[in-house]
Picture 1 (cartoon, one colour):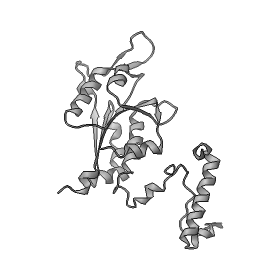
Picture 2 (cartoon, rainbow, N blue to C red):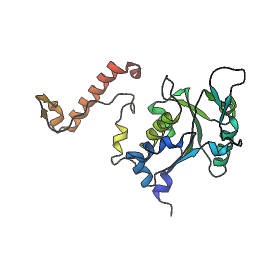
Picture 3 (tube, rainbow, N blue to C red):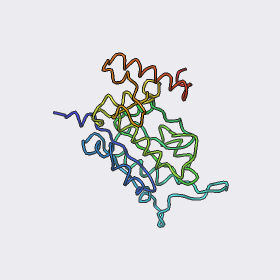
Picture 4 (cartoon, rainbow, N blue to C red):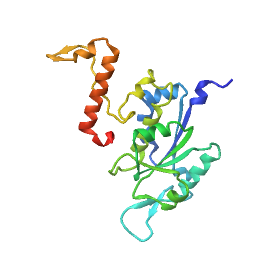
Length: 233
């Protein structure tokens, strides 16, 4: 008999030249709990052992000249090929500033996959042939440039893991996050009801669930109209 955990478990492989960057963020909080529950398997792969040169370098000068080094195709191809010998991957994703911009809809879609690879770029970029022949999808976390794709990969991994059923203590929590219904989340409050003379809206203390839900929806629409009006289109 197959357990529900084995059915829901997601495997995420991250390829990087700086594996030590993942030691803290990927072993804390929700991501750590998800791994302990067996709901996600997270593997970090150092790219350097997959290069054939003695110096273990993974980059070289760009053909045609220009500033900056380029990640070579060989170690990336060898690493991906080694992983694919044991696992069938739904997506092989390259983290790059010029990829499709990450949003909640993309996170929802990717969270339904069973196995994915996240490839972290570095230096000036990667050999274009990697993008042409080995990658299935390219994702950006925003219109700016980081030192490498490691932080972006952490963001993508975290955004997917929290959507896996059973990861959050209250599964409905993820469904009420900002962007799930193309609205920003409404304001939230907790105890005490009055602090420093600042009061929680009375309607939230009424106990009337229907009225509270209406208030939250109206507050979400108002907030979205002020801060992300394009979502309402």
